[in-house]
Image (tube, each protein chain N blue to C red):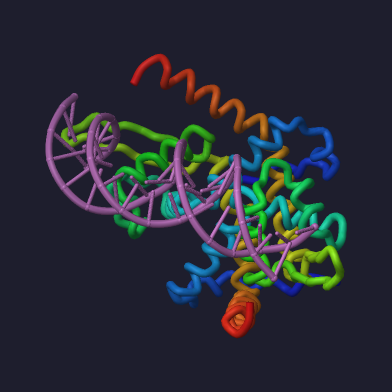
Length: 134
Length: 134
DNA sequence: CTGTATCCTCTACGATACTG
DNA sequence: CAGTATCGTAGAGGATACAG
């Protein structure tokens, strides 16, 4: 399953403020506290039920998981399938769009991981600087 | 100025929870309401003074711009240079790390731009679905 | 089991006024 | 001009209880 070809670079110049806002909106949501984490679990391990996700995304509350999944569903990153048994059961799965996002995001994550020493050093330097004077 | 080679993919398995938290922290900050925007202005147009940034990052308050720049400085993405004239003047500039981040982020942005129709469609479908039933 | 509803807290952020 | 201080508001998100 190959990604679509990237849009040409000058596409950004042709975008309305509304469109730019939507993109920022999408990307911001994706890097919020839980979305990327939940989506990563789904892309890594196939469909998962609500309660499995609740275990895997450590620290998330039920309420926030519900909200996070709704957003991901609304933006087309996951599907939600109700299995009408007793007890009821709901499966969540990453869509093609969801998989694509994770694939696209991974290089950024890896880059950040490789640069981790720089971040640690930068913070240490800054904190040392600001504790002394200012 | 070439980027560093990416870390190998399995680097993620060797990371402590603390390190993973730091990466999420960094990446989350970067996509927050203002950071990426401010940093983009700096990478596009060389050093800028505080008041120029305040104009360019439309809608940001003085307080938030100060906070945003402090975070970016602390994480090593920008430098802050005080020019002691009268009136005082402060220049902000993107570091190599800051430029690298923007470069790394751009493909993701372009991908999102290219997929914009999908997002619009997904949201429309979801909203139609949820207005009918639920 | 999978949600929704309520409450409560904490933080982000704008507006405004003030300082070096 | 660049920043700090203070206030007020709005939203995110946890804990808990309850419903289908």
